[in-house]
Length: 382
Ligand SMILES: [Zn+2]
Image (tube, rainbow, N blue to C red):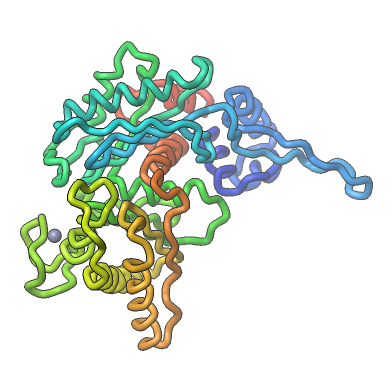
């Protein structure tokens, strides 16, 4: 617990010294020195040389999360493919493998191709590069505590014990026992923007993901809002129009039906890709502006981040959304909320899933059952 408190603190505040850390987390300097020595040996932390200037004399050595040794794996389960990335502990992309689904992916076929892709990425690194954890982002509602996919309508999955099945498939491979963490894809991408962006003042951070479906992740004070039944962030089913277009959920006028569905023909990889219809893009964009206005009113976010395949459509979709937000703000004599696109582009969910692994490993909540390594280490040193 104490070790991870130090790591977590350095994630958010890189460059602190041992005595800064001792003060920040409320431990003695000698305890911090002991724990830091272990964390440096294991590859979590690194010391950087201090440039000493004559006048100031010797200053305390700054500590950083080590970007060179330990690895995280992040997975995006997409509608069309499985994407696996390896990142450093600080979120730099180190490797990527994309494995397209052959046909409609069942949970079993998807887990088999995911395991193969994970092992392919693993094989690109020396055996002595330790992999700390595997995060997985799934387009659906996920019970993250149990690693169970409750509903993934665009994949046709229902009540899939994803973590348990994957753990079984990875048994007796080089990834045996590596802790697994499963989450909704927008939640994972939101954690990526939060974890791998130290010093940002985006609290709450609201990530809106627009693909075939539409969802959001909300990070408040460094924690992802999950809701009482793991449905928080399902903003694609906020109703924007009474008796509007029919949505996949059975209701009418949902944001997903008015924003994501009309974009589908224009997204890359769509076999029947059409010539863009400016009016359809404009209408989808204006509805996105309306949705963001409602979300901004609900959460007062420090920043709204947009991501997903819909970003490839570009300004003919995004500009109308920003225009609508500005109109609403002007009418209320307020500044419009800050909106930007994801820092990780097409890797937003994969890198976000790697961030999910770091997020969970460095917080004192029990990992999923039967995961190895870290929880034991933490207990020993606590
Ligand atoms: Zn709906």
